[in-house]
Image 1 (cartoon, helix red, strand yellow):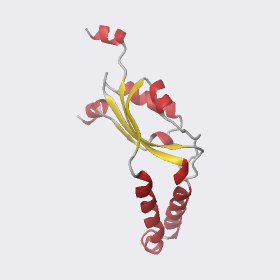
Image 2 (tube, rainbow, N blue to C red):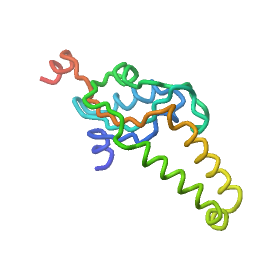
Image 3 (cartoon, helix red, strand yellow):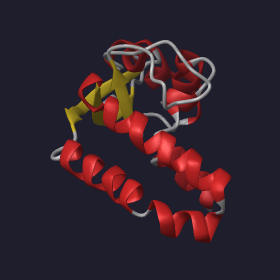
Image 4 (cartoon, rainbow, N blue to C red):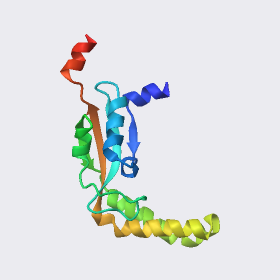
Length: 147
């Protein structure tokens, strides 16, 4: 049941920025979709390489060309509403909880979280949080083959 559902409406939640080859990842997502099925994804667009996302990848300022090149037709592509306020509050909360995190997680893990939170806040104006919905393009020759 689950694999069939994933072929109808897969959701990629912040996975594309971490892919070794983003175009290959998007093409594979498009390939496994059923004809005319949709892909939902969230991702981060960056004006320059992120110091937070590791391993470091080339910055992508606009994912639309990669999505379209994968054979997907974009139905929705928008910057998530109020993401900066929510993201800033989240990371500031982590920094404010430093002492509690050290007790709960230990120094090493707490230090890693502090570093990520500070870097994320430093990069907040260099990125955008994007929500997209794209449909697998069905060619007319494929449609004829289905008849």
